[in-house]
Length: 398
Image (cartoon, rainbow, N blue to C red; front, side):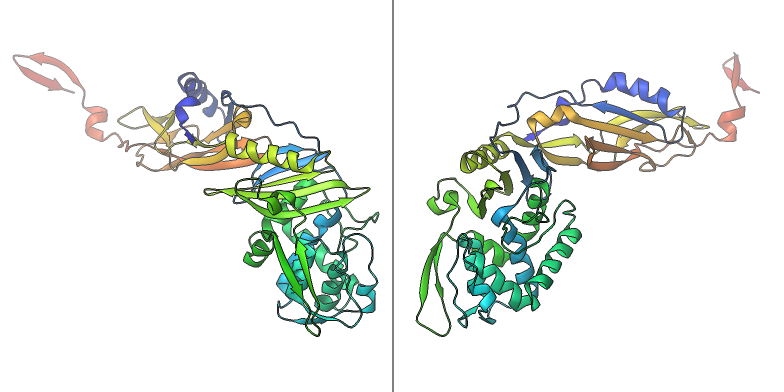
């Protein structure tokens, strides 16, 4: 669904007159205006202490509740563990389980045994599908040589991705005072991970069997994400659960319908699956395609000195379209920046400024403002020879 600009620009006649006055004052003068609200549902209530709904394609945030609040990520940590393993390891590598990895016994584990051999791919499946804590240690030691070096790689990657409120102290999400993140950072990290087709395939797997290389041992594993495992939500395709006594019940869920994929992050939730469904429903039902500026739309008129016409229409050069939740529309602001005036000749398409659309501190898009038509310069003939009188059917000039 797409909302046309007619919904927003009914007040433009008044705004244009104000704009012409404002742009004559400053070369880079700007005018801000907000769009009228469009009827829609209020932001959804969720029980989670922190939550975010993000568009997987654009990274735009449609819902934010304490998105930058420092939280323990629990096993959501394993998303970054998988990113590093996929980028620096080989899936068919055979990993020999160390005594250190085999000693991990807290929480969900694959029950690795010292000296066992298993592929990196199977370790990744165990980490992401059943949330095995021992598998992440085996992954780290194989890929980086030590868990400590692997953790440094995790933190470096977080910085590169812009997850600046995140610090990792382990590979699996155990409590540690220097191990934390926030809902926004976890959405950013997940969005990046979902660009990897192997990660996508693993986190969308409901159940599979883990095989070991040097024995007949096999382990059936099932996805800890109930929405995915039960197929109870249309379009669900990931991502990861996380739970510890300090972090509470956490979930990152993704779902795709049509060309829209959404990422819902809920941290310390009283009902993480209901909260995730509430956010995803909100995104699919209340987020619409909005035309903020249409190509050729007139924004103002600029005075032209020395031209055959005294003014020239200023129009939007290229369309600006974005996805927004309906209740976000009233918060969109438009900033217009233009030169105060022009000197003839003016060419059609000549840039005279730009229009910028923002939602709070986020820039939604921008477009150049251009002259809509040519304005020729006055010639000497038209400037000096003026008709003064008729006599006997003859027009006399001076």
